Length: 346
View 1 (tube, rainbow, N blue to C red):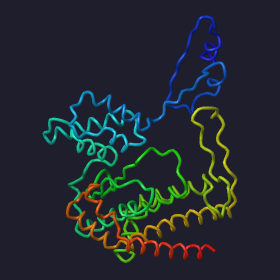
View 2 (cartoon, rainbow, N blue to C red):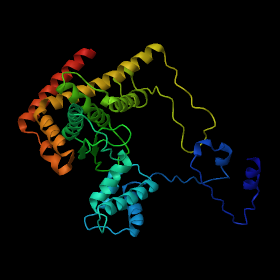
View 3 (tube, rainbow, N blue to C red):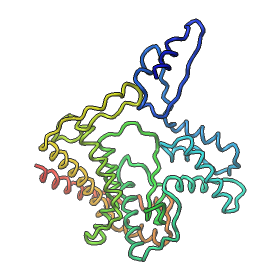
View 4 (cartoon, helix red, strand yellow):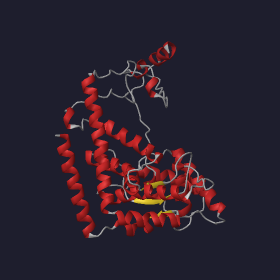
């Protein structure tokens, strides 16, 4: 390191030498390298946005024959957070899918199948569920989908499936983001938690409170969202406008010193736990109120899932349109739940 720094400082400025360096581990760089006069410009090559993903897909699609219905812009919208390598892999999988079905060109269905394969894993049709398990999974996934379709601002549902995938997923609900999001309001995070809790609440409602282990990942993710809201974003009114989580490492800059941890008393830790619990419980009540008002849609959708195994956005759309009476009933149930929650919290 000393030799490298000496060489950096020792260049004759009249020679016009420009030194470029790259790393994918900026957090372990010696701060001396980033000091003024050495690497003066720091260029962040982040994950591509939707426009960048579309351009990357176009580059990798040059070697493929695309069908007229292939929508690369739609695939770019389906893959927020994907890297260039991820997108190249998706197009390779799409080409393989088209080859397996004997097609002469890669169609939109092959592209969507490739996204599903990369994001959710390989279909496990050999994993046979008994009829009671299949019905529970169908109700669980339809619970997610109906809550997502009922909440304003939630990403629209693209596909609902009860075909097992990957290591442990017995079904999945795919939502299609309408745009890249860089900021989330409290209402957005609350909606996200409600969608996550939709599957568990559907099981509890239809099986008399007898929930299963299938919601373990949903509970984990909802709890993580609630913890971030309370400890990092100051979204718990009872705890005030303060961050309780330790600061994260900066992506570029002085990271030699370990981050300072916030000093939290045992009483405050308990308040944090209670606030996290309240947020997750409130999300569950919201999801339950929506599903209670749309019980008939839940049962009809689960029956359709059991029959077809997979529902596309077009097939799911008729279930997304509640009648005016259902909307009023859902609003009434939700209002009663909110009154009960407010009274319980004092």
